[in-house]
Length: 244
Length: 301
Image: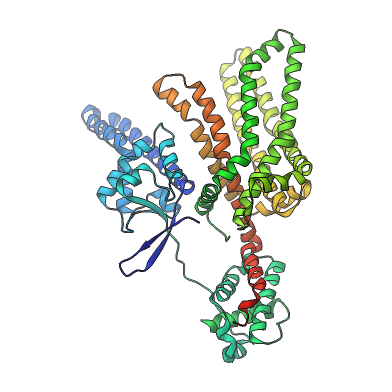
């Protein structure tokens, strides 16, 4: 997987997933649908103003209409990126965010620049220029990103782990075992992932994985491997609980 | 591989495509060349307009001669070139996901061993989809069209328009049926290449895999098909905005898109396939467990 790693002043590496043309094209499609809807709404209101307010009001309204619609594809993205902290509605739906090359949030000048260059990226009306630019560099930057020194990343959803580990018959054995420290971080992560995802799996698959994991742990703890699905899961739960 | 959202799947597919770009484009080459030859025949040997003319002017010998050559080309494409190329591209992408990279030669060697089963699988899908499309979309549309023409000839313009609109609406609704089947069968080739299942086995396995994720899979496949499609129409947009004829450029774009960007669709199919397996069968977990089991040294370190 391509990613972008940024070294902080404290030498802490921050790893970002780069958003490629795949998710960005969907985000921009959603944004353009919104832009079209806003334009259509403004046009309807402009025509309505002729009936309600007469010529004077409507001429003001039409002036605003042309200003808004004419600059909408630019202002929409700028306003969104400033208000939504580097996202637009489309980007937010796909968990994407614009940041500066140094990892800091995008500012007004950066947003104005990258979205102004969007007109070039959009050429010849199909985003061909932007598409080629994004495909030709490993950070998936379009010309606007180069000009503004920005990149688009995937925001990882940090969700609270709701893994509840109940009491099991293996708790005492695992807790007091000197072999507990032999569990490697990889094994712990795998057992944890299994417990989080087991509800998606078919009973057969779940049992197969649990059986193998439990056998592996039993070998470490130098005990007989547990028999049956439920017992295997309980043993794994105890291992995860006391490793933590 | 783990369960992912739509955006993440699309990103993974693009990353997979970029990482294996050269191998994928070379593997796609037979289909690209076939497409190129087909286009050249269309331009220099027979023109579709001439073909219709020969039928209209009762020159049936010329008409059926061209039609039979077209049929043979279609058979070669459906039974041989398309399944082999698609499988080779799928093999390269799949092996890259499984971190056991294979070359273009390896991929084609693998696919040639099972070429007839891959061909039969593709013919089956092609024929069934064509029949369904005919029954639920083309025939109703033709009936509505005939009724609209009849209404127009009898002088009822309003009724004709109404029938036509109704026909379009009914056809649009009925299109859901072939679209549904098409999406449920999208994983057939990844299944054939990775699991060695063919024909009905592959089709039914694909159906089961996509089941429960039909809409998400449909969305992903439509979105990924949109990318080459939009890029391909660039010359048409230029033609509209500049008012100049870009027919040759349009033709070149068609070939280039077919050759360079269609492997992206295959990569997406592969990523969706492994994602579905991870989601439904714990594929990633199972793989990690296997890796741990193989690594005996870690047990008593």
